[in-house]
Image (cartoon, rainbow, N blue to C red; front, side):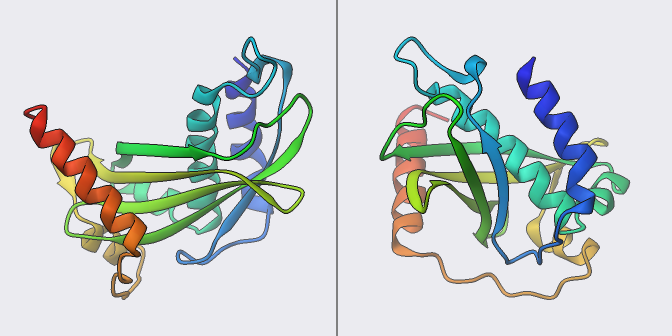
Length: 177
């Protein structure tokens, strides 16, 4: 239920916060609440993934993309994600979740999420996402950019992202996916 209130907060206040460009980093402020904790009294690892969903919502609103995407009947889905933890987030600790679009290919968008508190990187998540149409089928990143009136070339994949994509694809193939 606490994520519902956070979603409501983002939907209510993101429009009044500083806009971002599609290739800019978007910082979304959060605080660790009691319902975020696990038995070890730090933020539960599943909450990190849920907060990344909310940060992407903030990013799409502030980049003026959410409304245009919804008008097309499109919606985002996560195809794959991973996270690397460096430290723990504790009760009532403030942090920012910084979201940025790294690159894209013919099918997927690749985003990075950095959890930062007091200037320290707490965790870093990587997301492979795509858009689907409510009428069926997938939406290419090129079609998405067209609807957003953007003419951009995909930036080169950083080595760490290319390695993760390769490992993820190899693992998927080994599972027959």
